[in-house]
Amino acid sequence: MDFDYDVVIIGGAFSGAATALMLKRKHPPARVLIIEKTTEFDRKVGESTTEVSSCYMTRILGLTNYLGHEQLAKQGLRFWFCNRPDQPFDDCVEVGPRYNSRVSTFQVDRAKLDAHMLEVAVQAGCDLWRPAKVRQVDLVGGAGQTVTADVASSQRTVRCRWVVDASGRAATLSRKLGHFCQNTEHPISAVWARFTGVKDWDSYEWREKFPDYADACRTARNWATNHLFGRGWWCWIIPLRGGDVSVGIVYDSRLFKLPEGPNLGERLHAHILGNPVGREIFARARAIEGDAHALSMLAYWSDKVCGDGWALVGDAAGFIDPLYSPGLDFCSYTSYFVAELLGRALAGEEVAERLAHYNEQYPVMYRYWFESLFKNKYHYIGDAELMSAALLLDVSSYYLGLVIPAYRDSEQAFADLPFRGRIGHLVGEMMKFYNRRLVALARRRLATGYYGRHNAGWRELYDGFVPDSRVFKFLVKGLLRWWKAEAVNIRLMFVPPLNARAAEKPASAPVAAITAD
Picture 1 (cartoon, rainbow, N blue to C red):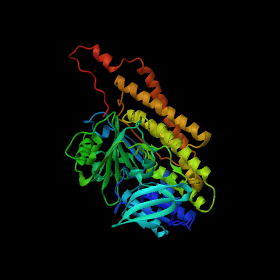
Picture 2: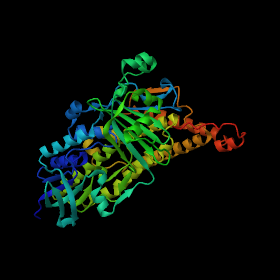
Picture 3: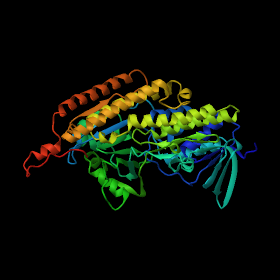
Picture 4: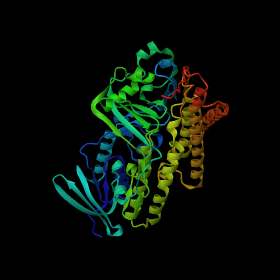
């Protein structure tokens, strides 16, 4: 049929541009149009890559040179815990790597990364309308799709064989077709901003004030993704090239409420200053005026992600949680899968089975990823013992299931979605089980006043995860820590809940505080 384009992509940020670039590589004759509504890209929730998304960007997309020169190398995940606001900094619990990361990951300014990806896609031969607002999309399957958009001062209409929705949280096609589903099981919200004047985690001042802290680590804490944790919430602290620091809080609205304040930046700053680690780092910091953002109900998915003539990629298909930075992983898997599918279709292959597989496997991936890593996690996220066990188990499972295959055969690893097949389901069920148990342990600890009791006086610095059999030592360590917590739980089963204990005391006797935040 006489189409204006083979593929029209709605959204020119990372997912849309990556899909376009991969499609041009898979099928060079493809005529691709990208429609991007903004004149400049905005900042996203969280700005960090994982080992999987870094593999995709370096080995598949070929962004190694760009990332090395224009973004910052990331030195792993670092977790901080406390059990009271006046706790001394050097008494807080620190969990993280002792040495430089073994596998390349990056702290990325998403606005700059998105802009670069779009530029690369255009250089590869894709057409671009920008700024352009999509007004209407008519999907009629094999007869072709019609997209109408406002471009500059005119309205344009094009016909194409395929439409790819990469519009992010706008989820243009998912909402239009009635497939958009809010994940009400995970009611998380986020507030984030850029800060200046943030204290350097590795400065000479630290060595003078906290020599044990300074001498314990052999890598730059400042370039890690540092996390502050409390029951029901966590904060990210991510350095960006140029000196600004991306800071945000993500919280479960069932468990935590952000302090009131005159504006978002000051509310976020006030919360951080209430934490002993945050107070050391942000005492002289300030939020950049006009650069604070907020989103509620972050988690959602589409119960159908493709059909004859259309497909969803990246955040347009779903989003779970920025903890562990899985968003770009989802973008990587979906953009590669859809680009390969479209390349096959444009080459004349029958792709009905691959469309059916994408619709079947995406919800499986989403549910397992959510239920094994994030469902009710905010109940135990503020307890250092439980969360450090989860870190070891989560990251070890991630390496065994996704990172090792990605570095063994990158093209093959991204050709399908995670948690596929019998083995994928088995691993997903095992991860769901230990996550449920950690939630149960946290609830009993909270009820008996044991929650966060050991959020003081210890530091755990490990050698670093690597994509080979050495990851099993971390898996074993995580299992042992979980089982130790189970042993503690047996003892707590015989401890009456705090309310019952309070009822037995005289009215004037104070009730023991639950150390949560």
